[in-house]
Length: 203
Image (cartoon, rainbow, N blue to C red; front, side, top):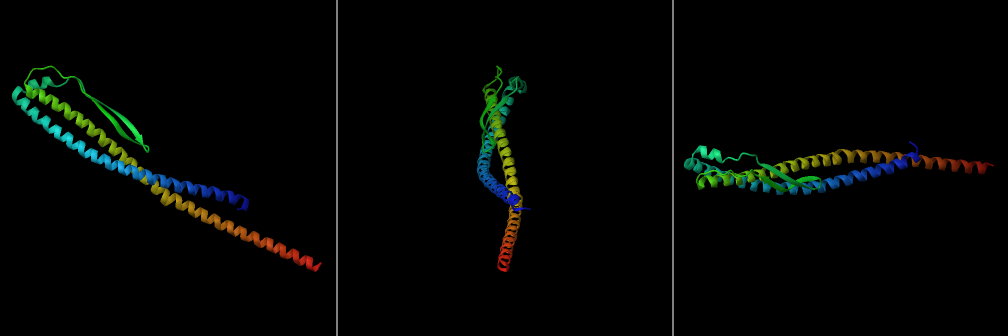
C-alpha cells in the first residue's frame, strides 16, 4: 500500500467511523424517546381496556334486562342493519406512527318499540363498541411502536458491536501501516543522506 493511497483511505475510514458513532448516538436517543412513548401507550392501553371492559359489562347487564323485559325478538329487531366503521388519523414522531384521532362511525339506530331497558341496552352497546375501537387502535399503536423500538435496539447493537469495532480495527491497522511506511521512508532518507555525505567526504 503506498502512502498517497493510504492517507486518503485513512481519512475516508475516519469519516466512516465518525458516521457510525453518530448513528449509534442518534439511535440511542431515538430508543430513549420511543421507550418513553411505549410506556405512555402501555398506560393508555391499560386505561382503555379497563374502560372498554367496564362499558361491556354495563352493556351486558342492560342486554339481560332488555331480553327479560322485552323478549329476544324485540332485541333482535333493535340490532342495526349496517356495520360500524372506524377512521384513524395517524401522526409520526421519530419515524414511528401513533394514533392522533380515532373516529367511530356507527350505523343509525333502528326505530323499534320496547321499553327503556332496550333503549339503554342499545346505547350501552354503542358506547362499548366505541370504547373497544379506541382500545384496539391504542393497543395496535403500542404493538407497532414496541416492534419499532425493538428494531431500533437491534440496529444500534449491530452498529455498536459490529460496525464500530470493525472500523476501529481497520483504522488501527491502517495507522500501523502508515507509521511503518513513514518509518521506512525516514530510514531511506537518512540512509540516502548518509550515503551522500560519505560520497562528498571521499571526493
